[in-house]
Length: 125
Image 1 (cartoon, helix red, strand yellow):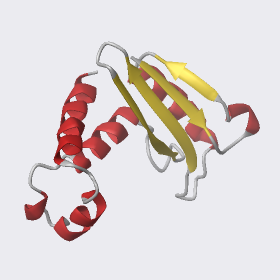
Image 2 (image 1 turned 90 degrees about the horizontal axis):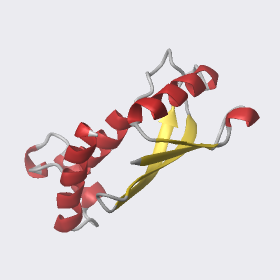
Image 3 (image 1 turned 45 degrees about the vertical axis):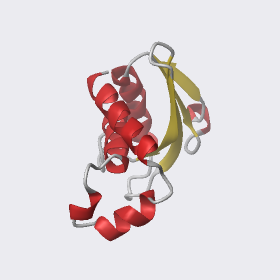
Image 4 (image 1 turned 120 degrees about the vertical axis):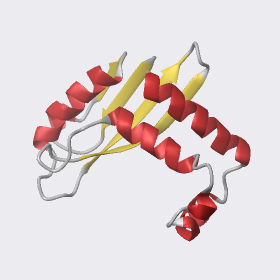
């Protein structure tokens, strides 16, 4: 697996692209970067790209980097949580059902099924 993170906002010397083999390595850098993220509850934007040739997958998204006193950086939890939200098994029973339906209405059942598979994969990676 290859995880590439690009910090888009923040100190000039930290706004660069870094690549890692594990979530633990990526989190170590994110936690270091979080020392210079805003401490007021806002965030600096980062982009991530996760590629795994063995699984034939590529996943791209945004990570909101917050100061370490506000939130501990955890890319795996962010990725899995996002995928699990998309793949909710029965959104009609959730307390946020109307909001959820509006957000995922343009995703097919196949995409949601793949999100479940990816969430399971990244939970173990």
